[in-house]
Image 1 (cartoon, rainbow, N blue to C red):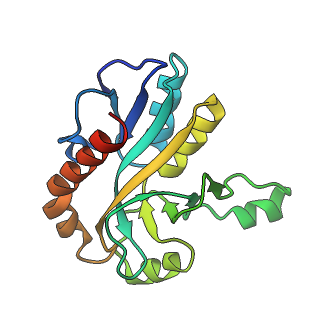
Image 2 (image 1 turned 135 degrees about the horizontal axis):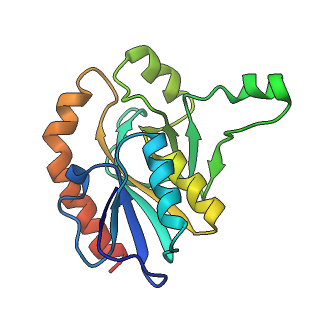
Amino acid sequence: MTLRGTISPDKPLLVVALEEEAQHFPDDLPILLLGVGKVNAGIRMAEVLAHTKPSEIINIGTAGGLATGIDGIHDIGTVMQHDLNDDVLFELVNRYFGQPITLKDGPVLATGDNFVTDPVKHSELSQRAQMVDMEGYAVVVAAQRAGVPVRLIKIVSDDANAASIRTWKETVEDNSRLLGDWIRTNLL
């Protein structure tokens, strides 16, 4: 876990998966680098929230676009897990373990431990969500369990398709600049 700055109860905590996404973020707010995936995000969030509580947690970073023509920065409304078959779990033990979480009105983000490049998976997910990432759901669950307000701010970095790896690499620096500008405009 890498933490830039000091977490305090009077400031929001920015959480992001990778240093590449945060390279142009201002140093005025603490930044927690989570690593990639739900497990890394959940563990690091729990470690931090066990010791200190910021005023708010903002998971800010890149996401793949699932909806045709979606681009820009979005304040996520609902987050869901796309790689947990909660309906089967309900059938087995009569309870759910990972239902979608609604934060506000806005686009739906599907979180899973796969960098989506497959057209079949893209098509399936696009029926339920507008964007896809790998950490958002875990961040929300950890923040809510700790009683800390949480927001997901995502910039569409690619189209969640076969070209996504190349596209993400080519756009990550520009996307970091745009997210840094969003932070300066909306949080400072």
